[in-house]
Length: 406
Ligand SMILES: Cc1cc2nc3c(=O)[nH]c(=O)nc-3n(C[C@H](O)[C@H](O)[C@H](O)COP(=O)(O)OP(=O)(O)OC[C@H]3O[C@@H](n4cnc5c(N)ncnc54)[C@H](O)[C@@H]3O)c2cc1C
Image 1 (cartoon, protein in one colour):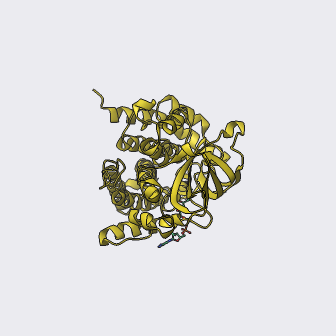
Image 2 (cartoon, helix red, strand yellow):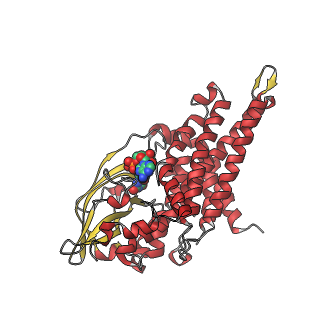
Image 3 (cartoon, rainbow, N blue to C red):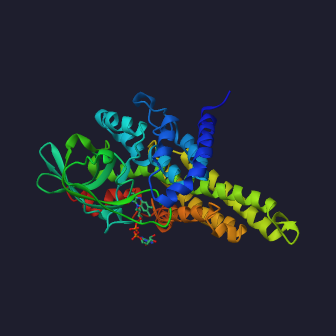
């Protein structure tokens, strides 16, 4: 009998065969891949991690990782959608949300929505706790003001999880919280004061909008504040626990792209002949191939280890250290592996009749988005050394502005 994990993987492989020939189209047109989203939705892969009580399949992060790897081999863009429909923001809402919040968001994701997580601001990138977007309490509402940029899916997503500095009615700082804001971009329906004001022109992952969102006195019902049991003061730290799953997902995309490049390179070394021999007979290329294989395999093991782990404080999300280490290693390895595969194809790899040039542009992102390689190193070193670094969980709790109200 087929195990549940391998059933998910088999479904993903079937879809990947459909997605591969479409991937260049989204890259060139810079359009969101709605056709793929419909296929993912029909196959039950949007929101597969959502608990069965809310209509999902309760799939584990490990199951999701198996799916991501297969999809990433074919289409990086679509793999990002799988991550964001099952990890990060979705899992934060399903873990910390109220019944009302879960019942509001789960059906949207199951029907094909990829939630947008809104943390980064023009003045607050790696230093996320320096965000200046505010959510000020007014009666039964919070009023959002500020600007977020590089928001993946801005302009196509319905569910938004907007992080903001929470102020009470008197303007006293309560910490950082997440606020669920629902839009319907297809019909142009946005809450008053919510604007999509721009889109980045990116090097890779071109079909995914990376948008700037502006909030001017946007009213959010207080019931839509995502407040972990520990409240706003520790809230950002708790919500960032959920982000460890997103990091495992991002690392898995990078590893999947690298695995796809490795498969292509292996085939090509046998097909292409120079000096009356297949390229496969040249030891210089054999050694490159062996290193690529070792890098992909090590990445996969680290990512699976992280996907199966739990935080030391009993959180249902992957351990911070394992997730940071795995994403760091997998993202840097993937850039090298895809680059080496492209090299093996010579001029053909540099041209667009092969997908490697697109894969190279796509994979370059993964040492930047979702925690840069430098910040992940800082987290890992901080853990090893037992010191607080700006991006560790404890530092979120102790960030001066987060405790100003106490
Ligand atoms: C394609 C893409 C999608 C994204 N999607 C989202 C999204 O959906 N939602 C969202 O909120 N954000 C998103 N981001 C933003 C992303 O999280 C930030 O880009 C990232 O956190 C880094 O911030 P920054 O770009 O402002 O770089 P900065 O923080 O300005 O860093 C610049 C450089 O300095 C280095 N650096 C910074 N601090 C340190 C330090 N203490 N020690 C050593 N080096 C340091 C960094 O590693 C980097 O190399 C996305 C980014 C990209 C590229």
